[in-house]
Amino acid sequence: MESKALTGALQAMLFASGAPLSLDKISEVLEINSTQALELAENTRMAFNAANSGIQIIRIEDSYQMSSAPAFASQVRQLLEIRHNAPLSQAALEVLAIIAYNQPVTKAFVEQIRGVDSSGVIGSLCQKGLVEERGRLELPGRPLLYGTTSNFLRCMGISSLEKLPALKHSESAGADTKNKEQQDTGDGK
Image 1 (cartoon, rainbow, N blue to C red):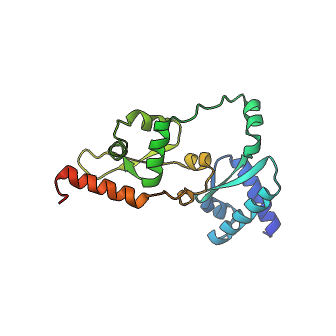
Image 2: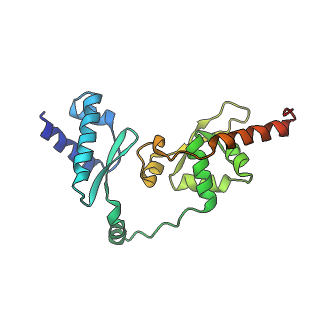
């Protein structure tokens, strides 16, 4: 298939899918290798988005999806009669940041950093589709591990976790936590 036909096929696939379409699926359906699929998807995304239309193609990890442009969000909400979602609380933002930067993490890890029970907040973030269970830790009680979802990436407008802003003072914060743990266990001499 020639380049224009592949581009058209990919656009049609993204439109029809509605959900994120993985590079593996693009490669399989178009019968091209993974390198060609990545190049095609990126070229199509950049060309499509350069048109500054009401629709854009976004990258979410190793998948691509068509979505409405953020500039027209209010019109789309009005058309679909979608109520504005309540903004996340300060507690939810804290928990989301802890999980995003340290995932996969347990509820106990989040609570240790925040100093308060975070069960309700984690449950709320799971219901909103921003956080999901990622298995269990191999420790007594087998606590659940949590991580962010592709919906989190979409809401944050980033393509992968590597695009999260760098943390300031992360080394000093880690050292403070380590010193506190040593003091708590009596090992800090």
